[in-house]
Length: 382
Image (tube, rainbow, N blue to C red):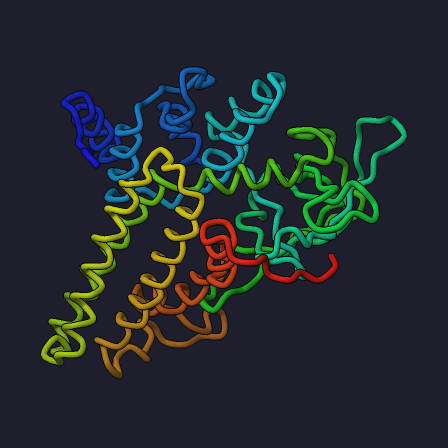
């Protein structure tokens, strides 16, 4: 594909780079950083002409912004779930009232969202959700009861979009509804952080005990269609930005291999070159599918490519350091049992890459059934 940046795109890139250079370093906590981004108009630039208060940008300008952000010293985003997942879903399926209510606070960095999809018995198999929502007598309020797990940033979120079963006795993808649930409901919603191998707690368990919800997106019973639409939005621009971070991680691994002398091993050299070549391949694949290729398997192919690549890079990061990779950067203490350096964190965190966001097994099943037309995998009762 013929992909390039115009002078307008480069001017936009320069503006983004200069703004980030001034504001990103020492930006403070992630919550205040979201408000800073919103006040400057950098949230929701891909939402189109009805940007609800923020600037609009072409697809190539969105790529330029994402790449400059990835190269900067800016903090990790805590508003990306609302901006990149919920907002496009509301634009596609929400009412005008819902867009007016929820998009401006996301664009301003004022309201944060989390995603209530996975459950203990329905992780990658989303159609097996059991969280139930029962309509109250008033006809507009639902009582939500059940448990979600691996819910990113739930401990910070103001709202959660929840896939729940509203038709008793329904099975699989039938009878599901996409609900918007306010998180500030003491006694009805409990959030329990999950401590990970890395020692951090970005994921959470969320328990709903009769939580109230009034907002339905796409109509009752149409939750599966809305949920699948949402999952299709995480591609293209975000993939290209992700690869900027991957390239920087690969550079650090190569430098470590040179410093340790591991680069003299021909097997290590071959693996480093393969990582570089595969990263270039992923970039061209992301450019090919930028803006949507019509290929039903494209998102699954991309997930399989980057998840395995990143996991192998984590393994290389500790391999090239030898025995030194087993020693932490700080002494053990009761208040801080262990501290990880960048390579150790990469190795441990990347173990989850082939699981979260749809496991490798699920991605291969999607490709088999929807692209190759193979017989559907037998499913148990939900």
